[in-house]
Image (cartoon, rainbow, N blue to C red; front, side, top):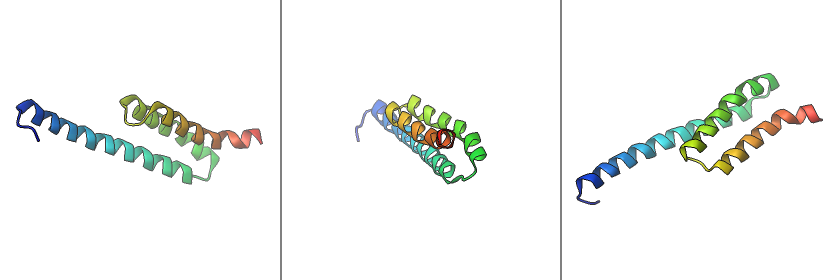
Amino acid sequence: MANHKATKKDVRQAEKRRDRNRYYGKTTRNAIRELKTLTEEKAYTEGLPDVVSMIDKLAKRGIIHKNKASNLKSKLSKKTAAPATA
């Protein structure tokens, strides 16, 4: 670790950001997992916008890549669209 005052502060800030990002990421992953376990279509479609919003926020903050966010949203929305096309 460096001895400069500004570098020590940067290390502290990075640690806070890392903890915050891990929290947001884990919370979103849990929300996705809970959404996937829902069996009722109505409950799934009601919960989907909240989870999509969480995923968008992760991408906006740079916690996950925008393409990963897009892939996650696509996979989740396919489950909603599948019964309508069948």
